[in-house]
Amino acid sequence: LDADDYGIGCSRVGAARLPDLDDRDCLAFFYGFLSLNGVPGTSSIPAIPTSIVALYITPEVPLNATAPWLDENGAPAEYRVMLIRFGITRPEHFPSLKEGLEEIWRDLSVFTNLSSGTYDAPGESTEEDPLTWVMLTGRPIIRYSASTAMQDEMQSSLLLGTLFVFITLTIGLRSPAQAAMSLGPILVVVVWLYGLMHLSGASLNIVTVTIATISLGVGIDYCIHVTERYRESRNEGASHDAALHAVGGACGAALVGSAASDIAGFAVIATSPMGLFSSFGTFSATMIALSLIASLVLTTAGLGLLHGPEKQDSTPSD
Image (cartoon, rainbow, N blue to C red; front, side):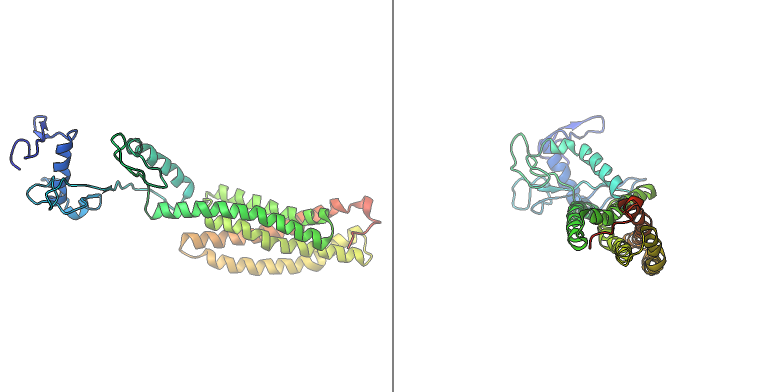
C-alpha cells in the first residue's frame, strides 16, 4: 500500500499527494481503507473507529486486509448500502419537519438524479443510473409518514362522520333544518379548535386531528340536549321566549356541570410530561369548553332564528 498508486492504479493529486476521489479505483481503496482502519486522527482531531464508519457505509462481503479494494474472496468490493445522517431539530413539530424534509430532498438531488428507483420502491442499476434507491428513514420519518397517512384518514372520517350525524339527526328530529341547526355549532367548534392550534403553534398531528373528530361526537350531545329541551318546552305549550329561557335554566346548569367534570379530567392528562399526552389533554379540555359555549350560545341563537317571533304561534314538528 506504500506504492504511489496504492497498488490499484489510483492517481494522486495536489502537493499532499492525496488520492484523487474522482477516480473510481481511488474511491474503492479509500472506502476499503476506512472500513478496515477507520479514520486516522491528528493532534487536534481524534481518530474515528471502524464501528463509526460502519454506521454510514459497509461492504457487502468482508474485505481483504491487505488489498482493501477487494473482498476476502478476491472479488472487487461492493458497497450496496450507504447512509447519510441528518440532524433534525424539533422532529415532533410536523410543519417544520415537513420543510426540513423538503430541504433534505434538495440536498439529496445529486443522488436522486443518479437513481432509477422512486421513494416507494427500488429500481434496477443501469449505466446511466447506478443507484437503485434513495430513501429517507429513521424514527422521525416513520412517525411523520404514519401520522400524515392517519391524518388523511381522520380528515376523511371527519367528513363522513359529519354526514352520518346529519342523517341520524334528520331522522331523529324529523327536520333537516333542525338537524343542521344542531350540527352547525359543532362544525364551528372544529374551526375554532384548528384556529387555536394554529395560534398556539401546535402542529397538526394524529392527536390533534383525533380531537377534532372526537369533538363531533362529544359536542353534538350538548347541542342535542339544548335542542330537545327547547322542543319539549314548545310541545308543552310554552312560548318561543319561554322555551329559550327554559333551555338556560333547566339544562344549562347540567351541561355546565358535565363539561366541568370532563374538563377537570382532561386537565389532569394535560400535566403529563410527554408532549403528545399533554397536547391531547389540553386540546380535549379546550374542545369540551368550546362545545359547551357553542351549544349554549350558538345553538340557542340558531333556535331563535329558526323559530323566531314571527313563528311563535307554530310549534316544531315532532
